Image 1 (cartoon, rainbow, N blue to C red):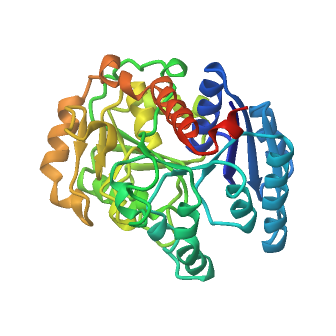
Image 2 (image 1 turned 135 degrees about the vertical axis):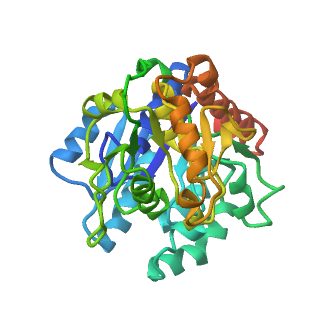
Length: 367
């Protein structure tokens, strides 16, 4: 099967999203699929070269403004047509006219990673209103939908659920590429947080509250920087952006890792965060502010806080007990084997194949 992977991407190759794409393409290729990634992006210069070097089967379609963005999407879709791909796997984004055209001639599968109706509208602007006006059309054009959590099914338009094939596949991690870290021997707890800038649902403010509640604990923050006017306790160290080779040593010193603590800000109670999977692959226990799709019944190495504002402060005793209880310990690898990307991507590719085979146009698509 020839698969076109289509996405809008403006981040670094070290981001969790790009690592996920690389892993998906690698596993699909091993399973016999022919995959090319089509990236619409505003990055330029050396960043484009780095993106191209990270994956041989990638085609870049850059843009600089609104008009050139429309043109970039059209060029990407035209390239998919010329390259004669049988299936399109689209990481959900704004619906562009070129994508509508594509969905009318090829099976398009949509991967939904968030509550788009909320996240796209954290700022009530033209982008928000356009998305709300077109999202039903986007989903109605799909041949199938892949969700990273069960809860996301509730945000789909009602007429879609029950009519379209839907698979729930939580995010995975490449366990082969991550070696579990030995437990540290800290006298006082050390916590670590991996994240990105300008994503309020990650809950950096809640993390700073945690640091203030436990002034003797050390907290390393990798990725985000403190907001203007935001008071940072002296026990918090903001490292800024680091690559895996650089932040691995920081993870090795940590007793416990922190996942998203502000999921309530995008009206989500369940998620499968990429960074949580990376923590667990390294063997770090995790504190998270919502349910995890792959551990809905809970796990001794995951402290699930109530998904509401101020949860850190209200659950201080529970946090302290969890952190102190996990000092000098690591999560057993056998407890997270089901998170392996090979398990996830075999399931995903099987879903694509089954839907295409059962589609009315299957004979045409697969010939």
